[in-house]
Image: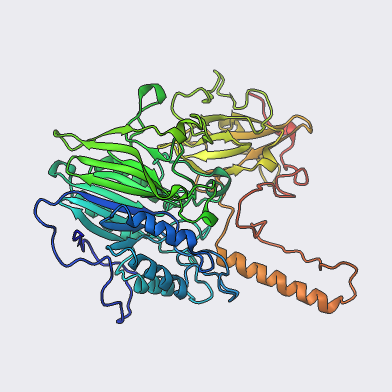
Length: 573
């Protein structure tokens, strides 16, 4: 067994555990430096465990599969426990003390050093802990960690670096956004800047969710529409910070993530720094290979696959492999990355496998825009854009375009989606299938004369139209009713709707409704129906669901709320 050096770089996290009773020896700790000349290494990577104490067969079997490949180190990508009542306590199991203790014993069973990055469910002990800080302290304490992040030297000038989520109750929007706090980001930025590729450094990064710009497969109907797809998804500039660091610091050679519960057989479960020119433009991913990691337990899989990752490396480069738990833990080589002598850059060669080839190249392929593809729509000479080519949107419509303000919108799977301008990665839902079906999308200029509005006294006022980009209106046209809906941007200029809110807020709303239902039973004991009728009213919100599915708001985006602007008042071009 090799010895791995645990590095303490940068400042301690603001979320450092305060307990004086930490485990005496964490399995991940190291006390000696690496032996001179020892370079070969193997790293086992576990996706979302979602351990369920009632169903441990796959979890334990998977550990034996991984141990058979003799890893020197184990990295868990978080989401340690199942987000259900697994103990008949009427509490979620994820994020609780029993969960942390069970997974700690599980990791110790590997018999080699390990470390963990927190996922979006790892601070979900909402009935046991009142705050994220308390929950995080317990997480760190039981797993033998000092900080949410980690850094270990697995071989000379070869680092394993992890960033963990630190927010759940305090999330501004959905609690399932994987959020890395500002201090970790600062620590990470300083770390990668201090380890230049020109000096021979190689860094493997780990986070629960992938970073925007990675190009890995995502689930539009779940993580994209809910705003929890990427690391720090709703953070604006912070969201893009990670890909900017990858592009700048070519010491970052690979980045592993989980979160989506998808297998490793898809074409885009691994993405490379460069692509064949026939497949599209250079994606600008620095020197980094991005790899999606699946799940071990069948009950947590979205596509039936049960797989983990294995890195095998030496001074010449590294291999990314799949460990297939449904096939007895066999290993499959997925990619070989070789270092060059000149500047320590990487060359990538993907290896085909029979089971993937049999599925065909389009097996569950998800569309993402690329510069110059056939789905891009441009403006006519008058500045108008017919996004859907005079046809109504349906489930087969695929189109994308750029607004003059720099934002990027597109239609896919019957939804209007906003994409990140730099990476063309999906940001979130703008208009849902419920509101978009049967409508056309047209973009028209809305500046200059259109800035004249009717004042309170009936006179005409001219608004300040001095903007950096031409104003535009994104219009949904309903030919059947003769109505047009204008898709207004958010106050920050973005378009994607942050519909799903903090889970704690939604849980309290649900409890209020349940209390009202009990009151109905008391007031109307002889009610004709079995279920009491209870309605809720909100401010700007319209649902307590944890999934964004609808954008239509009755009385706002429907015919009940006609515009106060009369058709005759709109000047023609």
